[in-house]
Length: 205
Image (cartoon, rainbow, N blue to C red; front, side, top):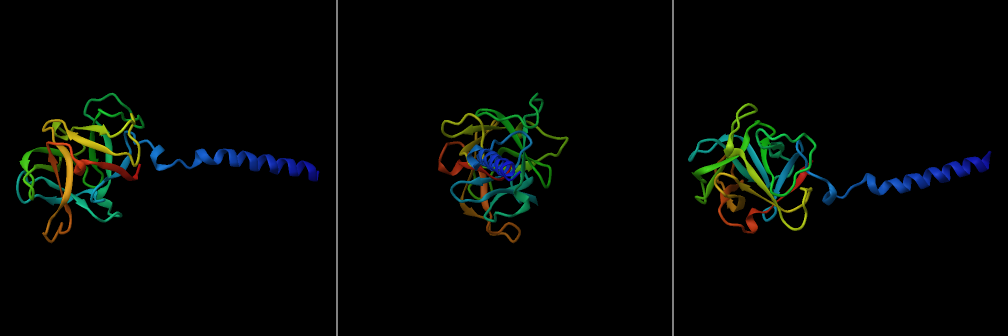
């Protein structure tokens, strides 16, 4: 009886140790898929892409989009969605070059851009627009993965290029001084690739 118990527990421990590597995937192996809820971190400033029900005081007057230094703010979550009319399903992987939309979790508006000037740097304004039932082509962004990876993964460097304006989602050290968004970094669109338009999927997934 004792020998049987010894053999049973030996096999059980061996089985558990064999399974352990696959049960704790590293962030670099975690896929971002349609339906993922995540925060996008700007590589240079470490700010999270953020929005809240505060309109721009200039330009379009639409809901503002900023970069926030705080990691745990609940207004920095975005849902990854396909472009309107796409046949893909929730849970499908997303390849480099794919057109996606990002929906702000809290306000249900879409990450948007157009030819209005951004408030601080006078680049392309990035805003939030629409709702669950209203979305247009100004909400479409092309996912561009940096490096050799084909499918979007957590902690992987990416760029997002706005389909209509050609501008890359961008941030920098220029900050707002207003009471409501004071200390937030400007988020805008720029026409050229540079180190300030690199982002990573951070928290969430």
